[in-house]
Amino acid sequence: MAEASEIPDYLVVGGGSAGCVVAARLSEDPSVRVTLLEAGPEDRALWIHVPAGYARLFASGRYDWKFATEPEAELAERSVAWPRGRVLGGSGSVNGLVFLRGSPQDYDRWAQAGARGWSYEDVLPAFRRMEDWEGPSGDTRGKGGPLPVGQVSRLSTGAAAFVSACQALGFPLHRDINDGPIEGVSPIQMNVRRGQRLSTARAYLRPARRRPNLRVLTGVRAERVLVEDGRAVGVLARREGQGGEQRFEARREVVLCAGAVASP
Image 1: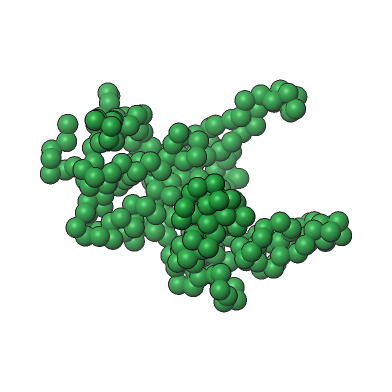
Image 2 (image 1 turned 90 degrees about the horizontal axis):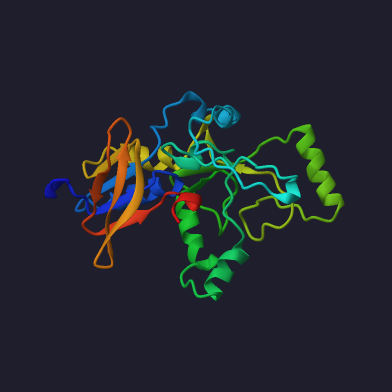
């Protein structure tokens, strides 16, 4: 049991793409204390930060959960690897660095289904604030945000041929895949600056770790949420190198950011 003085206001579970942002933003308020729990290690490995290194990361399996799909009859009963990041920065530290907001129509359908505040018009200001877009200015793109976003400057011969083939088949060419509908073909956009990957662990969390009200713990795997009187009050977790379960509590909120696969 933690001392009362050690219990944070907010306990963020999962230091991936979302968790790093949530912990950094919450800790902007100096009157609250924030603890971030990440099951994986710090993001210090060289190949995390070199854009071409993601293939090595997948091959090593050291920084992902080694998830795989169930055997599928349509795939001749094969299972397919489904890498999800297990490191500070989460999948944003091990993926192909592609930046894609998603389809505006999907956000609008969420709002139409009852998720008020999640239409594309509602979320667009957040997208603009988060990015530092290296391309032309426009109503849908942001400048000066923590996360650099840039267009691939030169297509390989194979990529250029693919784009041309798609156009020949009638798919529209998008100069900016994150401006408007995403149906069609477009060069990708990436989170890279000066030859290095910029995950949210680097863009958001790293500057925030200088704050005295933010505590980041790696090697801590949350196993279940503690609910008392109908309210989430903390989690039970296991720390690498230490036996048994450990209780982590929160005064105000437990925020689950353990990924689309693990959070449920």
